[in-house]
Image (tube, rainbow, N blue to C red; front, side, top):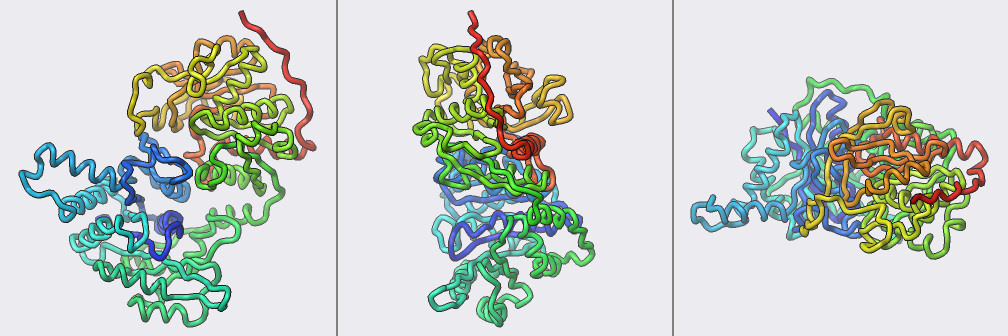
Length: 550
């Protein structure tokens, strides 16, 4: 039978419950167990798909097309667990479903209330998240204990624990031990109060994971145990890491979390597996053979989490080549206003990520052109691929005013246009081309060489596409459309064969990259950047002559 492990957080938000949950999953997988992971979020949006990246970071897309919380990216990167539409639920989606059932008459005239109807539906979702039959289902509760909006979720998991066999539910609470520099002391009172709030609700945590910027002081573990009613060996230290978030699982292992999980989930008959692969990864991250600098030219550059999966995938590519990554984050708007030369000179590669809307587009186009004419590796993703297409259409094919109808509906050359099935769509949420679609790779292309196959499955999140009315003219001018979704003849990949690396994809490969299995495109991009660095930087190159098409 499936056992359930609930992860809650206290004191402050953004403590890293997602990384802690994923690390717990790694510990359990190393014991040969199958795990599932699920995130329950207290905000009223149905999903994060319509939220600004500045509000909530990136939107992580699952294989089956759900727009979800970015923590699901940590789940998939750290583990072998596959997330899906049941792996993320919000207050908005839960209330929407309960109200739909009420309108349909499912409650037979009863008054619909938070308890039991909302809490019952939350418990249904927990069971749905574990429907593949994992040995352990890990459920992260978003928000912070003490928040009004989190109360129904905490009440639901309290009730859930009473319905399961004794010993089949474990509660892990993540808290903060703040260090006051003025007095030189680490304080346990916020942790005590957070656990007190949980106990008022009726949840007594089995394990406490204490986030701290420096190791616990002597006697602190025993003090926390005494005041929080948790055994000393179940008080786990989670110290801030120096090199990479991928240090966290091993740090938690060394501080006894694995042993605590064994005790509370009765896993004594499961052997601890080898950690050689993680040790090797951390060795490559801590002792790189070199360093490359990658510029990311985006419109949400101020918030690191807005491009979280991209930054992680770049680090995976760097680890594959034993090179440390140095990021140069560049606002596409600033680059458009002041020109690319001062921003991009000295980098070894440029990545142009996705986005929506006009802001920053001209900066992305300028960055793509700067790389193309100088032989500098350039990798475009989604809107970045579209910017590369527009740049090539304007400056090589000679299509003055070429643009995307997303930002210039009446442009003379709409080389990027709205997908046919998106015309007339008014709802914003969940209405894009979402999820995994197959892409056929052109034999002998750069993309097929990188992937080592002729068919791939990649995740999408977009409404606009390369306009096939311009495809022949682009290809005649030297741009190779090397990947196609055959069912609808949609261009998925563009590339310049003679360039060191000038490649754009309509999909989001960053969602399928893992530290132990870097995505081939990110590994190839970083490899090109390493070669650029070793060759003394990008050579100056003349732009190809304009090719004017009738």
